[in-house]
Image 1 (spheres, rainbow, N blue to C red):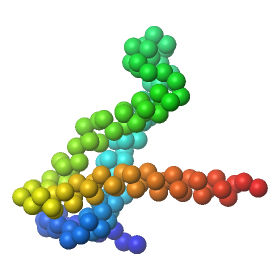
Image 2: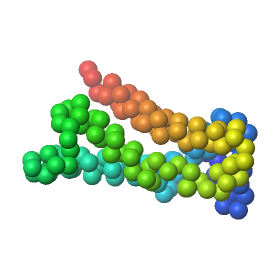
Image 3: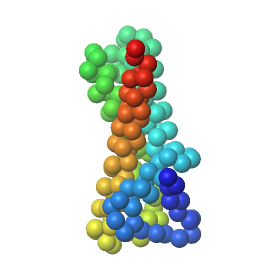
Image 4: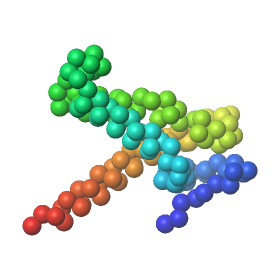
Length: 136
């Protein structure tokens, strides 16, 4: 399936939520992978800090400890960085074209919110299927 690639000089706004979501997946799964690389780098930095910092420095950096705390802190670090949470700036031409239309702006924002969740669940589904084939 081919993802739509918008021309840099033309701002096209999606007609439906489905079109907005397809366009957002097209942006997320093509270089430079800005959001995905930001989230992955934050996860790597936090995981290295969690497991390899000396105890005193780790206690100063993280106030929660334990396996459940690791998951919560990891999620917070992955999604709290400005490049990961500022969904409007990288797509400023389309956002500026839609800023006066609340329905269109909401459609763009909903698609931007669904895309990371969809990429994450698609990766988990592929991971689970891969493990299922390894079992006897």
